[in-house]
Image 1 (cartoon, rainbow, N blue to C red):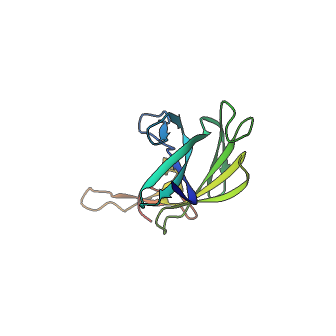
Image 2 (cartoon, helix red, strand yellow):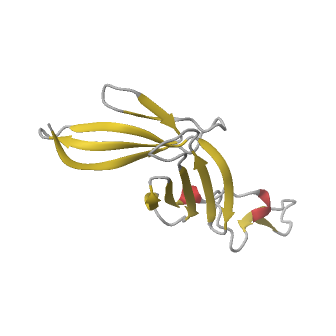
Length: 163
């Protein structure tokens, strides 16, 4: 017999070095598995304190859109089939740029099981700097040597290079 307290555990896998987003797998103990970019497991404790996982649900399988924000981006996902009692589940993951903070992700909104919103804040929410994000400073010629130093332009929130 299981206790009556439970919580949801969300698993997200948003990036890959190969370019395609790999799927994460949620699974019920000794049962079927579901895969998606975002999935949810119900986690309970049995009377003897063991963790029991049940009801795995896919919360996002396909990336619909990426919208840019001033300090980050929002990834909009949907499911491809009914889930959580909904025709489809829409999940938004906002990545906020904060170079001075350790990474933190939280569920910030869930008006019902059909719409979820996560927010990540940390350095990986910052876009990678591009060449045009830097200005060059060229030194005067000394002993036939001229140094060129690249400095990030004022207001650039990207990561890569110095502050």
